[in-house]
Amino acid sequence: MAERLKRTALTAAWVVGHEDGQHCLYRNGTVIVEGEKVLHAGHDFAGDVAETIDFGEALIGPGFIDLDALADLDTTVLGYDNHPPELKGRVWPQSYMAAGPREMYTPEELAFQKRYAFTRLIHNGITTALPIASLFYRAWGEKAEEFDAAAEAAADLGLRVYLGPAYRSGNLVVNEDRQIGFHYDEPRGFAGLAEAEAFVARHENNHGGLIRTMLAPDRIETSTPELLRRSGAAARDLGVPIRLHCCQSRLEYDLVLQQHGKSPLELLRDTQFFAPSTILPHGLFLSGLNGITHAAPDLEILTASGSSLAHCPLVMARSGKIMQSFARFRDLGVPIGMGTDTHPADMIQNMALGVMTARIAEGDPTAVRAADFYDAATLGGAAALNRADLGRLAPGSAADLNVIRLDSPDIGQRIDPIQTILLNGAGRDVSDVMIAGRFVMRDGVIPGVDDMAYHAKAQAQFDRMVAQYPDRTLFHPPVEEIFACSYGIKDA
Ligand SMILES: [Zn+2]
Image (cartoon, rainbow, N blue to C red; front, top):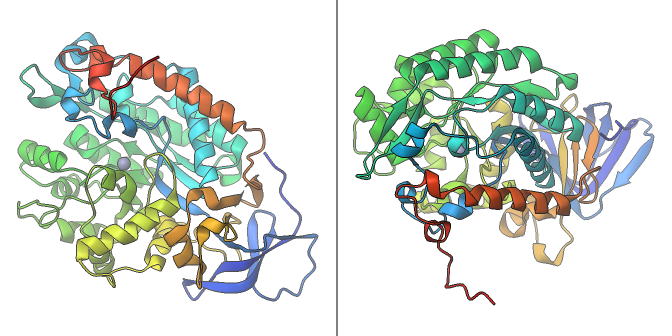
């Protein structure tokens, strides 16, 4: 990991500062970093500095906070055009469940994937990450040991993380009649929670506070009520954030209603799940929204709970779903942070799509502004984690920042850097990233990381995983049939 700098001035054409509880923009601004903190962000600084680094035509802003940060190999490409999920290996067939599901990756592969994913987050200007991975490829839940490796990787790369192995007590299965049902193993869920609690005790606040922990029960529909109850109580006892996928699909809402006679949010309320830092990806399917006609006080429960939504517009829009809407939740006072949740881990693309989908949802271009989403990706994430020192560049805040180039021909014309990056920018315009006063990326290069070698290694692991699909897909078709290509392939 790079050394921490002596008192250093970072200058650029634009700096996002922070005053009276909100961001402001300094033209030709300066950020003074000392140790792991910001000493000053604004214009004039009277004191001495050891060094000045000028980024020129660029925006220096607070690092992005990713509440649902992809931490494995993204499999979106497998389900992009290939539907429905239960015929394409994205719901386990009964036969696979009965045979005893297996790990699709080795522990070494899983450790590499976390490290690889963390480098992609840094490239996109993300400075705080709450990793998420799919359990489809696991024998059941995530293992504490792989998160020991993840903590090591994060510490080595200098990424600020909240880590916790995902656990669950149930899983969806599909039978030969294409009926989707559940397999439950509640003791396995309790064992997962115990493993996660032990992980918290081992890792909380390690590496100078860079490594924090959380509880991560996987999804509401794969958790029994007792697991939800114990998880919420554990999060409150341990004082760590808790994240649960909830209100993310129609199927989930219907299944929870069918099984428990209550809506997902009613189930969370009745199991006393909510903790001071509760993060719910994705908040799309609530009573009255996105076609849910069942009457339940979902919006009231959500608002009263103080939970933050993790809004991930890119992954959702890829499957035709949008939040209804960002503006409505904002006006109700529901805290909203952002997540990337898929490849690319491009927060800029997510903010841009967030603006578009929110305006589509409301049928009103004035419903949201670019700044709403820049706020969500910075201040919203910090609020979700109860971290007043993150998501802003102000005296005493963590020196977590990113530098976004404004001088590429691709960026077009500009009057304001925030609207410009949301219109024309991308994660690829992030050139430099600092976390806790250390540069973790300089001019597109992460020290000690060979991006091309990582890319090749990730593809090789992905190919081996895809080849294993037939026995875990209903009726066991060959790979070529499960994943059809866009056009007929003519091999030489
Ligand atoms: Zn998600």
